[in-house]
Image (cartoon, protein in one colour):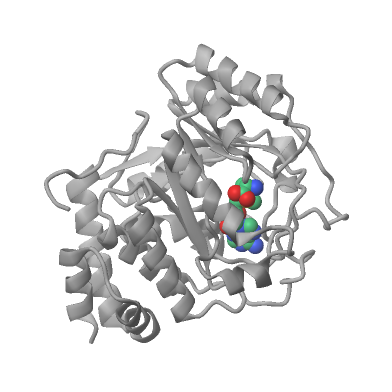
Length: 351
Ligand code: SAM
């Protein structure tokens, strides 16, 4: 049994590479139940039975990048591309605000249309209209100057999954012009600028091994992100990785629990991808240590065009019914949905 290792993680908040590999490669049902219970309790101790809701606006599916796993990659010529106007984006925020959201997440492909100037203007307008709301960006890699301009205009948080901490694997997942070193540099800069920063990875993507996941955990241990985005890899039929199997749900839930135990104060969403592998995936995520859910605020008409993977959950709902479904799911397992900003609050009593 690996319970001693889970206990060690819970007290020391770090493991060696060999210990991570052992835990990830050899965990059994009992280890899983043990980690889930500890992670769930840590989450309740920190956040109560409360879930932060963040409204996500998928404002463009144009992307200059060509990630081999991703449905909106540049080379997918079958995809109908869209981008929302500033007015559309503001309307999504207004809709979200009316539903109680106090965090807006703007996510998109790396779309050259949104120059630093254009995007800064959008952020500044949201900041002005919603002074008490948090603005989270998830728009990929750019220059330090652009990150700084977005921050100065009022953005507070940034989600940029590192995808994998293994440089060789990163090169198998991306074309040569997308450089591992650059993505890592971006994460460092985001933190230095003062964003609450989220990294993260997919579970079960092609060629990923326990050794690689161990490296991801070591990276997270060192980087100490305020947020962590982790979900299963799901194949998309118009990508080079179309024939690879989806990531395992159990392993994803186990990794989520390990992340909670590693860093009890981290903001950890139960992702849409987790809700896609199984209808109750996000409920299981919450019971495994997640404390954030990100309902979709994108206009109904564009939802089926922001498909990173096949069969994405929620594309048949409009914003209101998607929010209601997720609220009901959270209530069913005894959780309240919280509409405050839910900023990162570090634990101070322990290391
Ligand atoms: N372009 C921005 C970026 O690169 O950070 C934000 C959008 S990107 C589509 C958001 C995340 O989707 C990526 O970080 C990746 O982990 C995830 N993703 C892409 N394709 C996926 C797939 N096939 N299965 C699961 N997650 C996927």
